[in-house]
Length: 320
Ligand SMILES: Nc1ncnc2c1ncn2[C@@H]1O[C@H](COP(=O)(O)OP(=O)(O)OP(=O)(O)O)[C@@H](O)[C@H]1O
Ligand SMILES: [Mg+2]
Image (cartoon, rainbow, N blue to C red; front, side):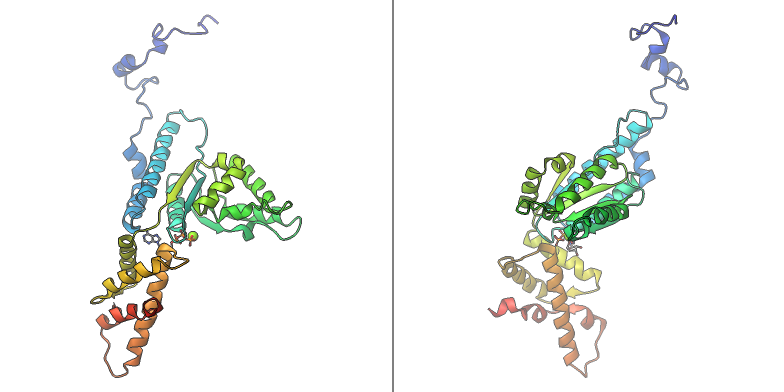
């Protein structure tokens, strides 16, 4: 009753800040009480390890990696704010990953789920990857249960919707996709503290989709563009994929593969790292046939793990 409703800052001991607190560090008004360092949060979450793995395991993707570091920084600072009672509401973490096929969207989404889990933003950190057919039914009344079932599976993790624009078919007036979108929108708003939605697809089609679906657009906080890989990056990805399976390029094979990439890039349906993986699978097949044909030879570890130049050069691309 006798305490003033509004205290003039600095006029009463209770309102005093830094100087008084410095004199009595243990006091409740101590601004450093509950303060933690970024290092402490990072150590507790091991998120630094995931970020480092992301850097080491994935070739290129510089802008994507930088954005993910930014998002991780935001979350760590958010944790520190929460600790000091400064937080208002859970940050919106829904994202859009746009880029051509094989640029690493699914791979990065899985890493993202781990990061969000380690920082405590999702309970489980798993990734549920779906397309339109998993969400939208064929008949009236089928869509809502389908979408809700997927959402239930994804809760506590990341829901990754590949080629998300297929949910919206303006040419079809009574398309059930709209129903799925509406359910998604609701959950993205109301359960954003336990589910992160990542929409993925070609950039231009995603842009068109957002233009026609402003509700969806406004709920996506982070847009990450996945650039196409340049030939040296594709070459490095190939080396990494081979090493993971205990293979290596023999004499002249890396050069042959570079020529292969130059040709393949000009073909339709080039799918970046996915095309590299497919090409290497075919090269392994040819290597196996080559070794298989030579019945008497004792095959050394070196023989068995070498992709030779002819294994690459036998591709149809060189026949034309
Ligand atoms: N930067 C990279 N470094 C190493 N490997 C990569 C990289 N990007 C993609 N890959 C590999 O290429 C393959 C395709 O990647 P991913 O499935 O993540 O691409 P995507 O963008 O989801 O493709 P899609 O649109 O075809 O689904 C995977 O085997 C993945 O491990
Ligand atoms: Mg994918």
